[in-house]
Image (cartoon, rainbow, N blue to C red):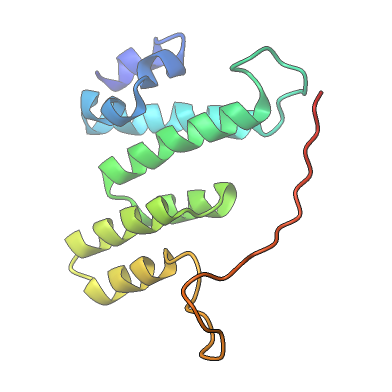
Length: 145
C-alpha cells in the first residue's frame, strides 16, 4: 500500500488489524505515512472525552495505537522512536526484548544485554531471605460501576 492510498483510507484501525501484519503490507513510504496517521490518532486519544462508546475510549485508543506504533517501529528498526513510545505508554518485558533484538541486529550486544537485564521483573532477594517464594502484599482497589 502506498502513501497516497493511506491518505485516502477512512479508518486507520481497519487497515491496522491485525496489528502484527499491518507493517508487512506497506512499502517504506507507505509505512511512514501509516505511522504518521497512527501517531496522530495516538496523540488525539490523549484528549478524548470520557464516556465514549466501546472502542473509542481514551485508554483503549492509546493502548491500541501504542501497540500499532510498536509494530511499526519494530518493522522500521527505529530504536529511538520505540524507546520514546515506551516512556509515554510504560515499559514492558516485551518492549525490552524488542529493543534488545533491534540492538543485536545493529551489532550492539552490550546495549542489547542491558535491555534484556532491564526486562527482569524483580532483582534477586537479599541473601538473608531464605526460600524460593517471597510473599508480596499489594493493596487492591476494585470499583464496580
